[in-house]
Length: 309
View 1 (cartoon, rainbow, N blue to C red):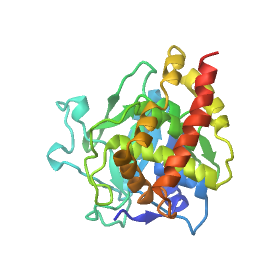
View 2 (view 1 turned 90 degrees about the horizontal axis):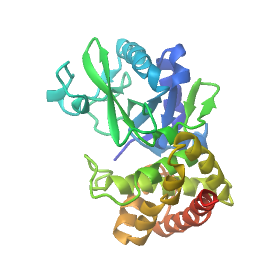
View 3 (view 1 turned 30 degrees about the vertical axis):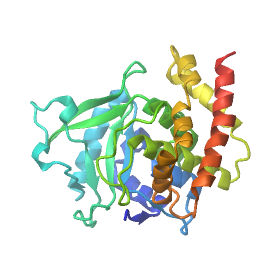
View 4 (view 1 turned 135 degrees about the vertical axis):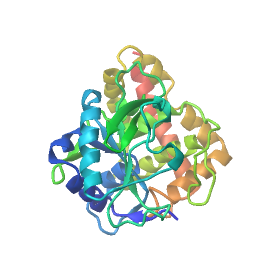
């Protein structure tokens, strides 16, 4: 079972470990960002997660900041996570798309525990024209590594929230919702490389499950109407994808709709929520389906209306 972590404790540990001059360039994304946004400093709330995704921005400084951060963490006793030791570290001859990512365990953690948490460094895409997954080569004393980027991380990094006490940023949960829906406009067959809490899961179902989990938490913390999300998405998608935002907006939510219409896929999504971001809640599959329908009807519906004007 994935270990429980308190969001603020992990973010504090990351903030204290990275160089002060790099904190403005880090945006925490993923489950940890959503958990911190909704749980804050609540010691009674925790989340099950093991990958702490640290997004480096802007793209032009990603290599420089990634080198500085990696060097300081490694010198402070953070340990590399080696998924495939035969490919670790990369060399000058390693193709970009085969470079190992920079994944580091904090000091004192049991690196033999497959559920122990670690940070992973990523970056935003160089351009809105970038497609799919790309790798930016980064060279440190230990060898060649890669900073992965995904096209819709531009949305996740849009107007992040600064954590004043730590100096880092975290992605707005509603922007991560939009990024995940844009990434998964259909339920793809590819499955995660490892079991999620003992179960084989489609990657699309995990990421769209996070959409449902964030919507559920938004309701639990007082959101009565998702239509404002649609207005905020409209601003973000126009800014990040000025040449094609209307087409992207019109196709938003098709994957989520497919998930809600498939009991098999919804069961997988519920499993990831109940054993991840919503591990402190007794959420049911039916509750997630209800919030998913509200997101489609209110938030996505508003975005599409604005795109048609």
